[in-house]
Image 1 (cartoon, rainbow, N blue to C red):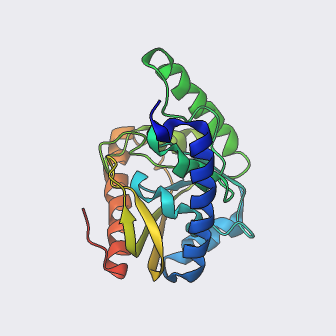
Image 2: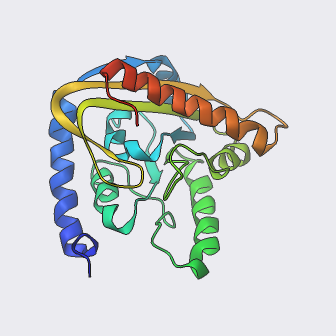
Image 3: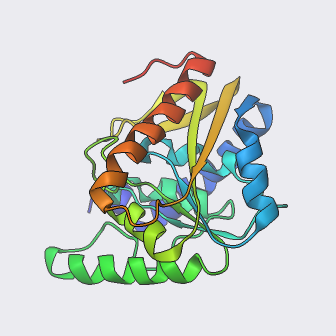
Amino acid sequence: MRPLRNPVIQTILSSVLAAWMKVCFATIRWTYEGREHAEQVWSDGGGVICAFWHSRIGLSPACWDLARAQPAKALISLSPDGQFIAKAVALQGFPAVRGSSANKDKADAAKGGSRALRDGLKQLKIGALAITPDGPRGPVRVMAEGMPLMARMSGAPVLFIGMSCNPAVRLNSWDRALLPLPFGRGAIVYDVRHYPEGADLAEVTGPWTELLTAVEARADAITGLERL
């Protein structure tokens, strides 16, 4: 067994990483743009889809005000070697929706996707659902139609979130996942959209891909983080 796939090692790493994230988030100097969109979503209550690219999972707890916002769950996953990051995020108030794990064989893939969709729609009746629409294995910043489909079926608004911090650690993963370092500069950029009535998925997926990339690029520009 590879070390990072050992459940005991993953539990230890996730606990350490969760504590590290809390220190970093408390000491980073944050800049916000478009926060009024998030404030409106929190004020309205109800279901909302929170979308960010897979590489920024390690920053995601910083974008959500747990004291004021809707209860949130995450439809996100990493490769088996990186599950400790998802577990660290869960320890900070974003547990995973059942069925979202990437660690399935081919025979279970369709079943797992259907279960994730069903459970995601159930979560959107009561609160927020965080989604990485290029996960769990990419390609990087290429949006699958699952997230737009969920927006169409649920009627929930989509909060597009770009997150960045500098300095940061980049993992040697397919998405070059970002982890924060303390006492740096951080940025969170928000925008919001509703699924256009009567639109086809293909008509929505392209523009939404561009929007999500744009808010992330803007966050990187604020912090000075080099784009990859």
